[in-house]
Length: 396
Ligand SMILES: *Cc1c(COP(=O)(O)O)cnc(C)c1O
Image (cartoon, rainbow, N blue to C red; front, side, top):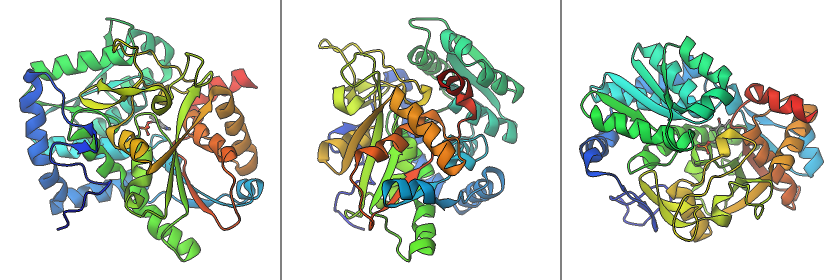
């Protein structure tokens, strides 16, 4: 046992430095406390680990490849490896967490899964795993998002999930979150609420980071096979709530020689009023159950974010990332909508890989760094671009 604080581990109250904790209504206390006291024991059970690992291998298709992108590397005069989360079943990293939480919910004796979704990616991952396990699945989604994201709504329904429209407020993600929380309060005994990123009250940020940490666990041994060393000089990832970045950073957080580069969505530009660059614009505040950096007005009203990519269109950031930013352990960059589109077309032509728009933000930020020939960069290719084809077609 070590008493040294690490970046990996929040304290017992769930704080990473000044950020984290559990800010929840009293009616949710029992549910969250039940999860908090049991999640680590369950995750460490041999039978849990075996089932989780077997599904990651045989159902998700892990390990995902670590690919030396030669033509992209030549362009930047350095060495760039892509961690291919786009090759996961359902097309992105979110399934790693959905599997972990469904298996955990079963061991907590839960019979019903609820989730909220904005773009529908987390909803699809959750509905997929619930179908696999034969568990009832209810996904809350804003009415506006249901209209905007018709293919994902169809996918969830085909997978047997019930999609419940959230009709209040702005009829988007935050309203869907409110509906899901209301459901959880009303069904405390039999229901588990699956959060899709490293956000929410403790223990969610830590739990989700642990489920996604398989990404950096694989990067270490795969990089050793490629280069002889487990440590890259840089790890890069896009950040919405921050789960693919947390997974890609996790086993490097306390390796201080490894630079961690997180890329946020600048929308129309950081100072345009149409952005989702939380660390650049946000102030300390409470959002969705934890204290973190939040985009807000002077009197604390949450600002509506904007990004061309639905997965980065979030006014907050997980508490781990707020801590990485405040402590200087992480470097935070941003890319605009247009930058991301350009980078998506660039990668497609250079490597034959069409990335998700979210990932394209991280790819764009490659242009913001002066690389050397000695650098070894691992970029988390969080998802594939099929879901973004309509946007790409408009941009052609
Ligand atoms: C949801 C999503 C993201 C953003 O979520 P994080 O929790 O920040 O990882 C990034 N990329 C893809 C492909 C996504 O689907």
